[in-house]
Length: 185
Image 1 (tube, rainbow, N blue to C red):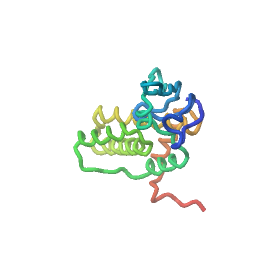
Image 2: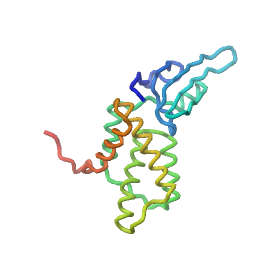
Image 3: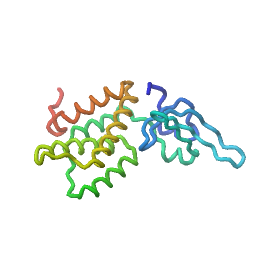
Image 4: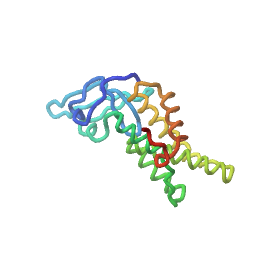
């Protein structure tokens, strides 16, 4: 998606305008294409066109809950720290880990997506090194989806292609962990 006016927290809900760029949890980055105000007895709706052919129509009340502003540089800096961080190793079965990651994916926060991507990348590398195996297909699919959503958002926020954003994600994961990174003088 090309860059357009992003919404700010104070611009949520009824104040959204056609052309605003928003994030709709697990559907990703979208653009507001229509805002229908509340009329006598009929609730207002907001129509968001997401990537591909997905168009979502939400009542304004739900739009206030499910839509969020596109991440700014401060949020992207948090994403960078998460991606450069160590894997959060949790002693859970793959099914519990998958359930927790699905919840993060459903919430659609950029930092949560970054955690899924980072942990999935580290887990895959570790599994290949130790056992010559990879994660389960459902875990790989979930990590792939989180990575795509994160790349789309970073690309939209920075005005770059999702492919360039995916390269940026790879570079962050491959970089030194945050606590070991050299301090710029």
